[in-house]
Length: 191
Ligand SMILES: [Zn+2]
Ligand SMILES: [Zn+2]
Image 1 (tube, protein in one colour):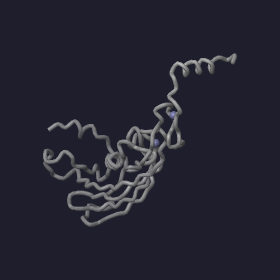
Image 2 (cartoon, rainbow, N blue to C red):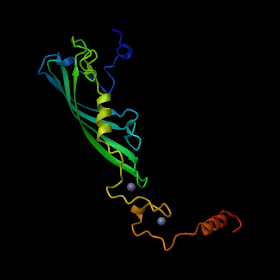
Image 3 (cartoon, protein in one colour):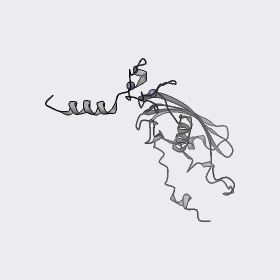
Image 4 (cartoon, rainbow, N blue to C red):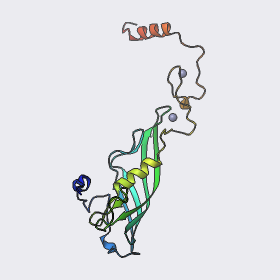
């Protein structure tokens, strides 16, 4: 049966930073290899408000283990995070460490294609680690990142960042008519 998805798959480059070469394992179940490397982060790794800066280093500590049907990849990835607090819009600088685990099945095994569409496959005994890394990072990120767990957010009156000024307060609400007048005076270059 014609499967456009398979046809359109580009060949993996064994020298690409997020491609792992398993040929050394010789498809012998039980043989394993440790891989430690730092790779530049691909673009858009994370979510809009919190992500790994593109090109910053992602430290991978992985074990590749040949099993009967493919290669099991387990390990961790560590990276820096950059983002914006959803309450006060202040910058967030953090780190993330995620666990990685995925079985990559040999692509030439005689398996029933309808059995499991979600299975990851090796391509010419190469592993494309990027989808696994993306999923793991996105799953580990909070949907609503905060600069600190109890971030007080912004002052509803004036928009000041309350974390910088905990005793912040206003005597009385500013009358919008006076505020407009004050702005006019500030804008006038003759005063
Ligand atoms: Zn905040
Ligand atoms: Zn205020």
